[in-house]
Image 1 (cartoon, rainbow, N blue to C red):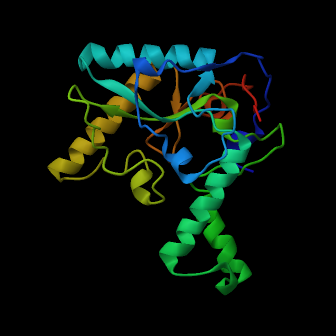
Image 2 (cartoon, helix red, strand yellow; image 1 turned 180 degrees about the vertical axis):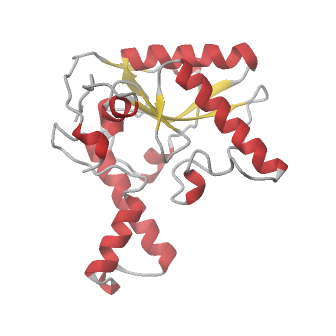
Length: 229
């Protein structure tokens, strides 16, 4: 159990609503759907109403300093079935990178590889006390696009399982290009924090409002959004 999962949940019952995609940039088709993730009748482009309201506000903050820039939504709501699919996919990618098969792994080595996956991916828990953040409709993975519609370079792609995913990875770099990566990450952080989100400590792209991680990071006694299976 991760520390934030100890925060109790007092479910607000707030609706999960469709994101008005015309107001944001999106990657289409959705990367996980391309892989075959089982969304069924669901869509990755849903959030709780209060979370969506704050995301719209964050974009206003962005455009106050960077006119015509937009937030690009990479991923939002994620059903448990999709969470499990992506966790299994990430594990298969780790195996492939190592040139291994499951049959070749010792129990300790297999456990170590799963821990590597769970540095980025939440366990697809069906326990109502420990829902994956994205399965609450309160977490969103985002980046920025500039006035020309080009993705702003953050120095590493979303979902990369490496140290570069750490929000402050480039903070102390003396390389001008890497300094710019950090500036871009700070801009993203600043507009989201101004809209009352919190940022995942290990992922520059992951922000949430109202879930257990948000409550834990902002020192709130309870979370207001639980899992939506």
